[in-house]
Image 1 (cartoon, rainbow, N blue to C red):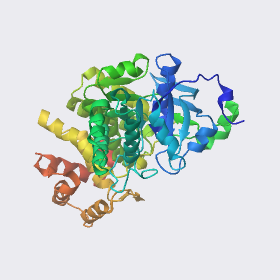
Image 2 (image 1 turned 180 degrees about the horizontal axis):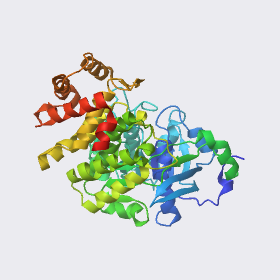
Image 3 (image 1 turned 90 degrees about the vertical axis):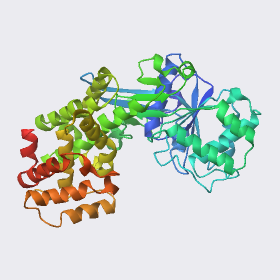
Length: 480
């Protein structure tokens, strides 16, 4: 039997949240949080889900009355966690490509108050071809602009009917960018000044940062899961226990959406920049630094790296000795987050392959690791050896071959061509390595600046590359 409302004692709640996106992440993150605060009688509201692209999961979601099962699996406080629950935060789902009128009609709901979205990093963009008369508009910002205008018209510009808009897309200043596009489309569509004024005065756009690993639908084990559940669920989703949602918002939002009055890790802050920097540099920076070191060492997954005595110590020391000292949040908050990260890396239920993280690794090193390297150097007037070593390992990694094994590199073609050119000549002397390193460090297209300006970086990097290439990664990591 398919999962439906027959399986639970469901309370009918007012539809207060419009959600663009029905994918795994939102269902395992924000929808789970709304379910929790509903259950704890801190909130009383259901979610209407809008499918942002033409094809998606809306039909299945409606067939299951908006219900699905969430499995949380991982390590928390040193203990293995495995738990599941049926999420009933969603009342219904709408496909605007099939029923645009139903989509617009949600704008007329008296108690509708929040907009949440995750349309992927590519979803918040300006589509010049979007028009108000489209049914629907192609882009998410286009659809939202039309929806907001319909709400403005229906309630005749009533400022009490404005919305709180919280994007979850993983881009910096996500709400600010979304608002800018909406204002641009409103001007392009020649909508009246009153609407532009209502957008500014009645609506609140909140930048947000989300963090939870969500592997998604457990395809390989779904038959076993359905037998244990006692019903068929085509929308089972798996996630890790760790979660963090940082929302840049005025204080009154905490009262309207009391997510932080539970055990949920939700922070309402005036500026999320330090939290974003913490995540990017510690979590993402550790991932990026780990990839070439662990791979050349013979390991293939994140978990294998952190559980290895040598590489695990390398990762921990990189975080605590070279990344955390460059950050501005209180040490206790940084330490707690870093310890959570190390637990998450050990999750026995997630196979996180190093090669998957290696996609576009040069741009990742530039945004996730290089700022820590530069800040460390500026503060201490010395180089962070492990972060430099990671770059040296990447240089060898991007040769595309190591210890007679071909490495399937994944990056933009110009990056691959550039490294291929650097490795055309077999280096034999320290001067050969230094010449190659200078070419790499001074490639402004790679780094946005000339890194040779950092005193001592050329020499140390060339030294590390030579050791890795001639003697192997074990020689340098074991000694460090």
